[in-house]
Image 1 (tube, rainbow, N blue to C red):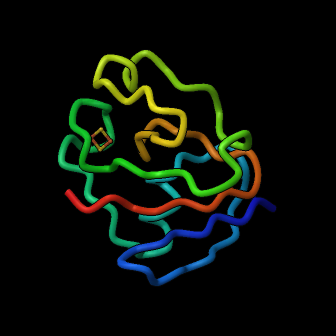
Image 2: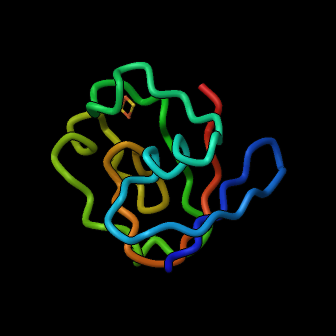
Length: 94
Ligand code: FES
């Protein structure tokens, strides 16, 4: 089972999840506060995350992320990034 570690204001919360869910889905399933103003549709950037490690365990960046200008190697939209393995990320406050 993939492990996802969320850092919010320097505090780490680690959860286990099944593969194939988005970062946002995993956060919401575990009552971890991640903003999602557009409802997870890739039209805002309030779910922005900075990847600390394990970026290779996320699914490929998609067109919605590129359209929103999220193209830095270590930045992903939580609602679009699919978790396939262990990852550590920082939730960016909007
Ligand atoms: S929730 Fe709006 S882009 Fe992810």
